[in-house]
Amino acid sequence: MDETISARTLDRQQRKAIATNCTDRKRSLDALHVLEFCATAAAPGRETDWLARVRAALEALDDALGEQERNSAVSDSTLSDIEQEEPRLRNRVIQLRRRHRDLHLRVRELRSQLDESTASEGIDFADIRRRLERLAAELRYQQAREADLVYEAYTVDLGAGD
Image 1 (cartoon, rainbow, N blue to C red):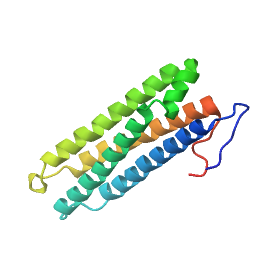
Image 2: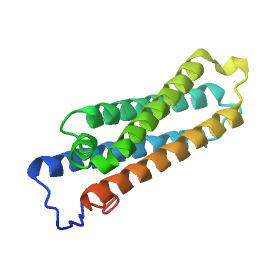
Image 3: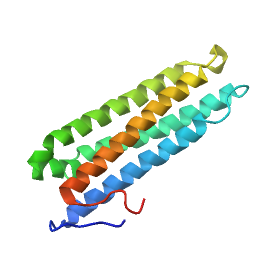
Image 4: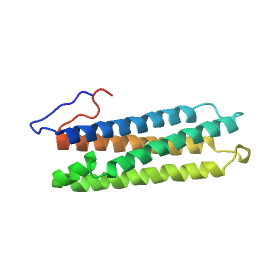
């Protein structure tokens, strides 16, 4: 991971928290890429397989987002450190956590809806893909906001080396 360090020197715990944050963000993004790949596969005539793959990929994204949410809530996480050490950024941390929680809930809701549907019911592939596109856009927006916040607090580029 290439880091740009400002005059503020990061301690060992902050570096570890930033590394965990980067790992979490990458895991979520990787799960999203798999989901997008599965969702864009041909569906007509392969409804059962298509739905099973999308469900599995959505479950992986749900798991990744859950782990990211848990890791960011602990007291020694990057977001917790920013919240404590940079009071001017506290509201942005709170907003970021709230948006992440909302996004995670939307993923769970979609999972639940897909788990209740069967291929024989006539799945609306276009609608599912559209909803997944919105989730993907929101996740990317969320990750960019988080990267900006961490950079502003520490002057560490989370995107470097990705």
